[in-house]
Image (cartoon, rainbow, N blue to C red):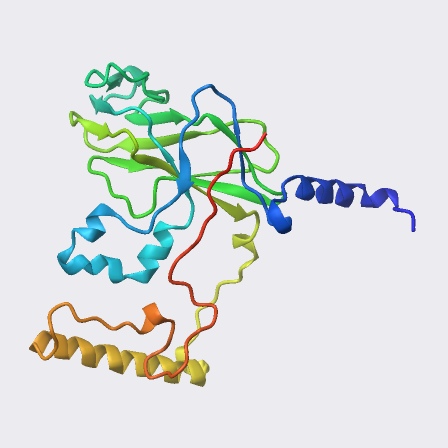
Length: 271
């Protein structure tokens, strides 16, 4: 059967999708190196130093935090540097120095936009399958004193332009240090238009009796557990594991699609 002229766009999209297909037809996320100074890219880890430093590592019991921490790939800074902002608007008001590491190449970070913004020129052209953007942001749940990572969404399925990663200094006259090997950027594909396809609503929980019954069971279980913990009836550090195990309070089975860890593939060298 001959293809009609109107199918040209569809054919082109299929060809593009095939060109970005990985093993077994899986979608590929490609980072084309555009400089002689590549940076390390690796799957984001579940752990965070501040989480492990909490009493009895309590923060590591929060599965939503752990899953969010792993939801993307991170780029690592390759030269330790110190940034200091005078509080003024012009680019020259931000000083970036690596005097303590003269053996290393100059930082890729620089002052480009002014207003205390630290900018990395990312040495990769990322390519996603047709219809996918790239969410570019700082590493998830990675607080850094005196500076804040700025998010961006890039249409990486068509553009031949690279992007920058930016952090905004929030405290003038403060030394902001980025160590060698420290993550400064996190990327994750995001299907374009998916958020706009949702139709948000607010409803009364009583309108869905089955879910309301399950919620009420959870609520009473949580209130009872919290009260026992406050009275000292439970050992310090006790916690409810229902969600971590993928089940509702009082339920026998677990959710088959429940995830407790992500397994992102590493970037592999390919010509």
